[in-house]
Length: 523
Image 1 (cartoon, rainbow, N blue to C red):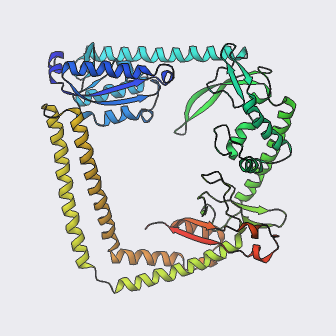
Image 2: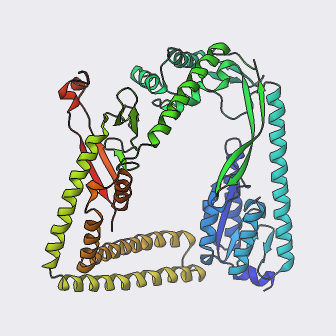
Image 3: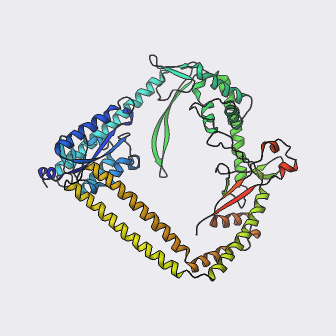
């Protein structure tokens, strides 16, 4: 296929637009300029088009980090070509560039720029030019990154603030590049450290700050993680710390390894005196060590509800704790915050009470399953099954008709009957219809499965047999058995404030009831 023949075959294109993340704030008009440039070019050539836009780094190494490009490649058959300002806009990463090249070759789709058409499936010179351009772009991206990183490290050694975010409690002097205290925020920093210096832990400090209505740096309620980041921030004792990190992949996941650290003492005015900052963090570390050891001891506790118990009020996972003073095992009071910033009201309870209740629930569950078996043995569902199968067949015909309509849309665009904007509207309507049909089919399929009497009876008998002597199992075997059938157990015990004020020895508080809701795994 010659370049001229390729140009004549192009009618509907995928317009891909990307600007680098670092330009997002300082040069936001770039995306608009590129959009206008390509739109004018497409209209001049008589192309219809669909836009795919994203703002991210050109060096993003995984296609999952490029959702719009991934969507474009997934839908490549709908277009005659890919339209870009220049090939470096597709990627400055060699792996992704090769992926784009391979896709274009497999589907025989050229890449169009305002100055050249890359016929990657048929012209070896274009393939060589594309690869060479991608290599240069990748090298340029790498050099710019290294140069920028080295420059930041040198500026940091001079005590200049070069990281993107200015710490809460400070403002950045743009002339000197130094941090200066912002008294409008610094009082909050001092208040946080004052509370911690009184020996209070993060949970107590969090609750005091939220009750007083003191806003967090993001203007929302405080939580444990935000407090930890706050008091461990060395900026508050006047230190500047910049870490050179390298992004690496381990066990299938990306993580960051610290390659170098620049630390400058007295780089800017301290909000918290260094000796006070050090004292607060030393106490925090000691408290953290105690919590870790306590959690390790609690992990050794084996219960039938281990890893299954969740808060019925906020939905968070609940912890089991061994009280060293009483030597009793408890389900801990939920310490998480609700979405409104209020402390969860779910109180703890002795673990043995929950386990006793679970055994009673399992016994009742076995009886219910047996009752279902007896009802099913008397049921006749043949006529209902026939009606459902007929309706499923009708829906399958509708699905085929919608697929046919989608193919006709692509043909209409290629022949010039419809524009790119027209096809987008029509396709969205067809997608909605198709999703509705699929949803109805899934629902009917589930109903059909529920009518399979023999399978349900067999499953119920299997569960009954597994739970036959549940109360006699060891805690470990009970937990293993429950995990075969139970997704989660929701525990709720919201004790009113007037009762909470009573002594823990008071019968009204001690015996306040709780509720358990078990969500079973679908068979």
